[in-house]
Image (cartoon, rainbow, N blue to C red):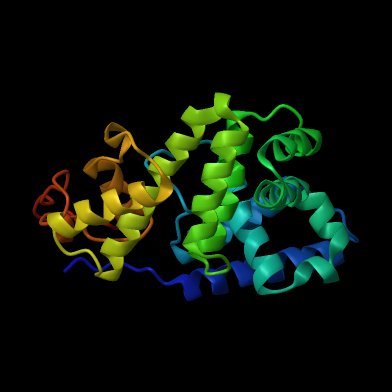
Amino acid sequence: MARGRVDVKRRINVLMDVWNKVIEMWEETGGVLSRGDVVKILKDVYEKESIKPLKGASNPSDLYDKELISLYVVGKHGMGLEEQYPELFDRIFGDEVKFESAIDIALREPIDRAAEKIKTILGDLSDNTLARILRLKMTEVFFGFSGNESFVNIVKVLSKAFPTKTRTVENYTRFYIAFKVAEAIAKGEVRDKISKEALKHALALEIGLSDKRKLPDDSYISRIAVEVFNVPQRSLMGILSAARRPKPGVKSGSS
């Protein structure tokens, strides 16, 4: 059975430590704090605690800036800090506040009206912005502040509201499915290739991904399982065809 570390509570505790450092610096400097400063604090604490950002197979240059979404979600929904530090949220998390507003509008308004209102808030919707909106909702699901159905709903609504962005939505959906399968492997809920394939196709059906060619392959799931959830490569061999037995003397899953 593959076992990694899906310790959501530990991640939340680490993010709370980051918040303590951010607030301390915010108060010491009288609010002279930039988004870049917060990114550095987050990165330093993650590296000290050997935690990887929530990610897919790639390591984009703005990965830790994207991971501020995790900090935002825990700070707002887990700690209630938005009411205590509204100026900090406005200065550091202005984008995330807009993303959450876009999500609320998308889930509340008729499709056409939602699209117009979201454009008013965010301007022309770039692929990166759309991916960050989806990341925010997925992060809420991961930390337990939203249910899976809320992510499914936002995917379906955004696909209809912004049909020219279908590829971006599908790409993020592919990541979401890979992430959920990797998480299930790490929890020990998926223990063989049959259950892995069953979960993958069930998630695709739930979310409305009809083109099975766009499902994540085993190598993609493997990267997430190893790098985010610390599942040893040898534990994946009976589950993922992309897994390879590590060479003698080489530790696996130690990223």
